[in-house]
Length: 86
Length: 390
View 1 (cartoon, rainbow over the protein chains, first blue to last red):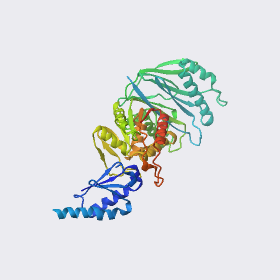
View 2: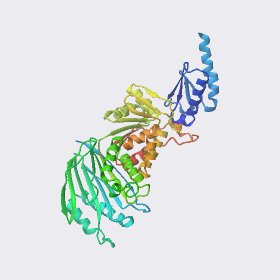
View 3: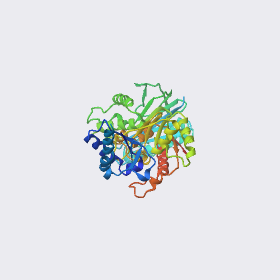
View 4: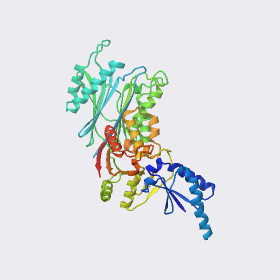
């Protein structure tokens, strides 16, 4: 799974650095480093809905305060679905 | 040979003096750079007036094509006579380097210029002449790429005399130190800053005399192309990128959308990182064929702040430490300040709607303003600046 966080100007000001930090620590906390790749991206051209975060090609709009919830509801759920399909 | 000349100088005032008794003039003619250093007799206001008059008279006359004989004659007849000593006196050195590689140096009573070529101190033959009872030394020579010339006032070679060192720094030790420092520094301003710091240390922060170094380095003409902001009209994207890539230059892109446009037109990829070397700036990225890719307005604001400080502030080692940091703002400022003679700006006029949001803690819709100020700062540094809008 590839998670991409926008680090463009607007998203940066809305807290993308905090989101990156939170995701980094959650990924290592859940021992997911070999399953999840965290990337940065310049402007995703959806600034009004920043901070823009993508899981593979699906776009989400995050704030630092709902990052943990996003991680549980989207990242962990998708990972367990992937496991079940196997 | 087509060369550029990078010049800079730094002075220390004699302890307790508000004015410096040394004066440097940096001048440009259409085909040359001129450096003048003069050291007025005594210290404080009197010395400052003598040195200022001397360097200004020399500068003005030289620019208008007067010969050194006429200049010296004018100075001797014009300088006010010191009440105590009954003489009018100020030393001077004038270095002129032509863009075709010709060099001319004339010295009157200053310590000799330090010449550095290919990692060695160089002795250049001179001719002595007497003009109006003053003996001047004249040097004529050909410059080479990477040559370095350091003019100094006697405060430099006397640094530390009677305190840290019995006889002061001496010309020989100073020249040896300069030789080492030339290798480890890129620009004239960094070299001048390092040399003057050494003088300050030798004086234990209490300079016993006005102390000045003026540096000229012969460099290749270095071009930086900086692209920031998407064009107002999407159909101009390809044209902007083509212009941006055209001449040989170091290339910098500031702005996410701009980087995306360049990547699309050049059919390459942006490699972003998530390493925050500075918490308040987004990380930098890389792209094939581009020296540096950064976020736009925040990073440019930081670079501009450093450039303004460089132009207006008191720069010292601490400033250069800041400039050496690995964040986008410092990296851009360092390139422009230390490694650039011609700056070409390729500026798109499109405005990002999201940047108009009054809820953001920083006004992002200021690109045009930033670009104008970057141009101003670079001009003050003596760079040639061109802007093209799209």
